[in-house]
Image (cartoon, rainbow, N blue to C red; front, side, top):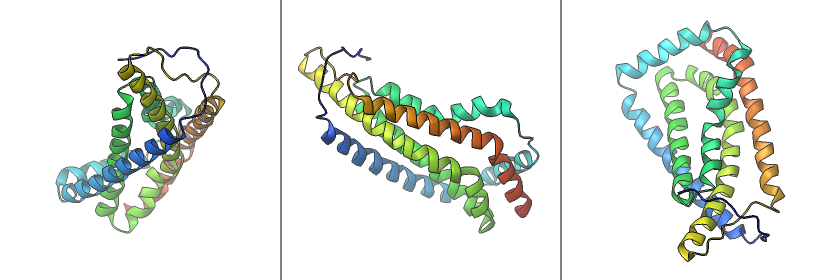
Length: 210
């Protein structure tokens, strides 16, 4: 159920909704991370995880740096963010935006925990090489976009429930577009780092392990 925003003037009375979105998305991200760490602990004893990590290091350590991978890196870094922005125009976003935060927390913490558990202390450097820079840049952007999309989606849901036919618009909310633009620039920088720098860091970290 997607709703097109009408071009009507609105005020900035959404601070409460944004705080609520921050609390909910943050809490679910943490819960997803806890579940991810637990799942990694249960799966670390399996041969599948060990074989996967070893094969990944072999491929990564010999991978050349190519600018052609920039678009793929950009998509990987921004997939959750694009989904969150899209859900901000839907009444379902109130439920799905926090759920995406939980999913992101799960996979991030599962991956980090799996690497560290498998390689021990040497895995810390590898974890920083693979996830550290990207997480520092993409996770804050995800929270920023999730909070404002949750707030917007909540207005859509209230409008639907009231059958008023008028949804909260982004017109006059320059802060929204500024945050999207800033996050887009950060995500592009992250993708560029993933393309040019991260393969070399992985190569260095893998050389210390293998």
